[in-house]
Length: 190
Image (cartoon, rainbow, N blue to C red):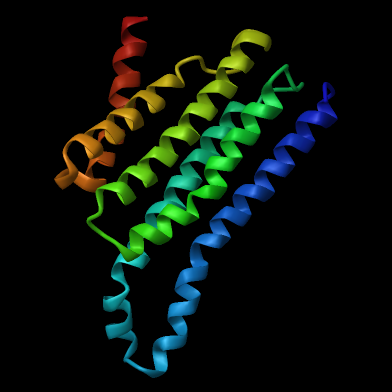
């Protein structure tokens, strides 16, 4: 796959896979909807608030990853060596995310569940950084921003924080809000 058609196929496959992963997030909630005859809707929503919140969180997370992926490939014209493998690794993490999302909705305070969820984000972020590295290395200058590793660093910090201090749980993801300020500081230094 070394033509522009190859990059188009790679991106179309990725877009379809991401869309399916986002769709899978809602399936546990569709099953919950069948309980509406057993309880009023307000009570049903309250009883399943963790599932609703985990759906919303994961939908936004996948959307953010997809937007980063989309932006990274905006001016890429050819598939470079190793890119298909790196992209498949990223897609594997994205497709896996509905599983820890379902666990997160069912078990709110389990360290392993939080670690699995954030660990999946680390894997997605690492494979996105891997793709960016390959593109920067093989693509023409200014095609891809080289500072992608900031996201990976911050999500890894969130993972370490969650595992080291279980009480922090998913709140460790708030560290990701530091990405723009860190980028700003690094841009000023350069």
